[in-house]
Length: 171
View 1 (cartoon, rainbow, N blue to C red):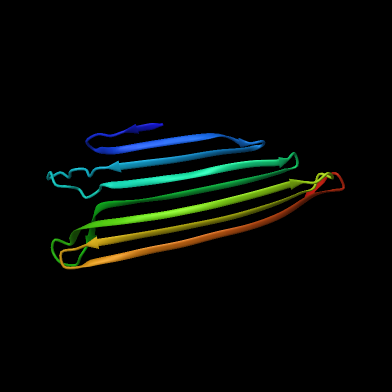
View 2: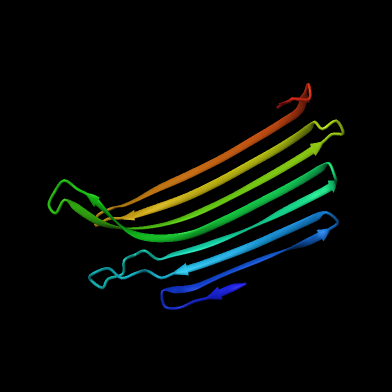
């Protein structure tokens, strides 16, 4: 367990725990948190770059029999942030300072299973899914813009491996 805080780093903490749940079944869990204040720019103003972050997840490994195993892993994260962006414009002074705020969220899960047969051949299966969401809001002198990003990714994998003529592996 880790925890702390201060003037710039308003608060942070982390915890990890793992152990044995049952015969041949092991787990690990974790959580992390950060809350950081904004910095000050060269003029003594708020630099609009504060941020907060949260993250957590777990992993489980199970070996129900000597020839088989199963793994499950999942993570989630989220947070918000701000910063100042300088964008070019076509009139004097040819740039514009804009404050930006945003937030994000993501999660993923992976499961993997493998079994080895008596003849040495092996079958494995893996599934992975990841999701990510982000929202950015730009504040200008006369307008406000919002840019959203959403991404989902998945992967499915099935493999069979066997020996050929005792000198080759065929997958």
